[in-house]
Length: 230
Image 1 (cartoon, rainbow, N blue to C red):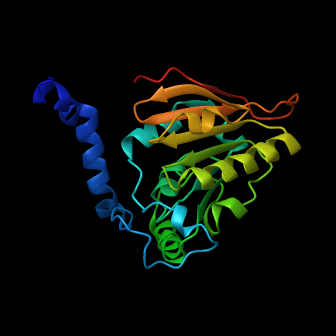
Image 2: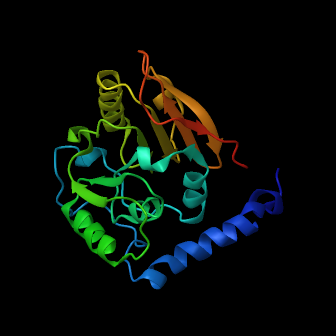
């Protein structure tokens, strides 16, 4: 049997201490409201997939910043899309980098409106545009540009499969590089079983995939996943 010390050592590692500090300090520092968890029951949502949705919880600040900074891409060529963006913390963090555009897709009108307020309050922005869209993820049409797509376990497998199928169809129609980042992926086979998605890197609780269209790709921004310390 593993000792308590060996099981819980990571809770006291410098990276975890920094993670917790930045998470607690984020809203206090910037006057935003992103930290509180929100259950979906009682919320009005767009579309018919409420039963497949998961509660809102904010993405970690430190590890997400580090991961996004270590993607070897020309950010100006890429659009960042967060499916299930909630109150918009991930949009704020991604918007610190010079992405061409940062888009959040959120099916709860209440959370979407919270995100709009947070976007107004947040002072750090290098992206060309940062916005929240009130829509069902399965009905959202991704921009026909190179993409970095982010999921923090926002919905169950039936919706995820439809969203990824839409992305795959879009990539075939308009060949381009698509990077998929999934935080706390419940089951790696969810993406492994879909043709075209290849696992490039695991970084702590993040899975990073590339989508390689089955046709030659030209005129897209290059992207390579760097070796990122685990």
